Image 1 (spheres, rainbow, N blue to C red):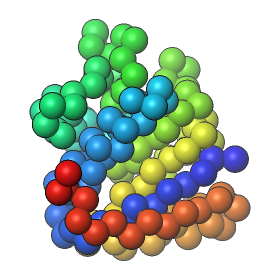
Image 2: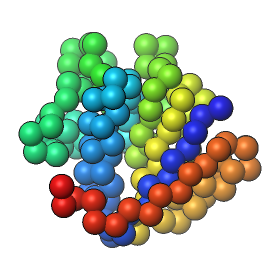
Image 3: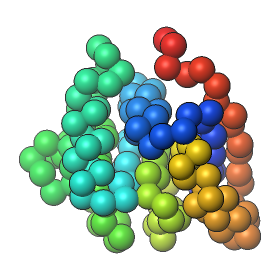
Image 4: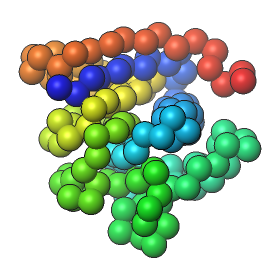
Length: 148
């Protein structure tokens, strides 16, 4: 069953959520895990794609938006579709940037939910959703994480 990790940041704004997601993606990719980043919208997918080119500084990893030529063979796929296509089915890590729990979370060994002040209410809803379905949950309080 998919392991759910909730990362609760002390930050207030959604930009911190995207930057933290970049760091998670880099760390998982360097460990050899395939990653799917589930964006809330096509606009957010493009924003995350752009951010991943330069953040964290000096740690860019190959990535692409699903359906683009950049995505072919990339360890990090970014998408916003409600349906997970077969080529996106992986046993690695899914990073959820949307406000709801993706229906396809079971296709991943691990899933990360990142919570900032602006997403606290929807984060609680997702936590209850996963808990009621018996997913193993871990909670991580994250303090000053951008200092390194």
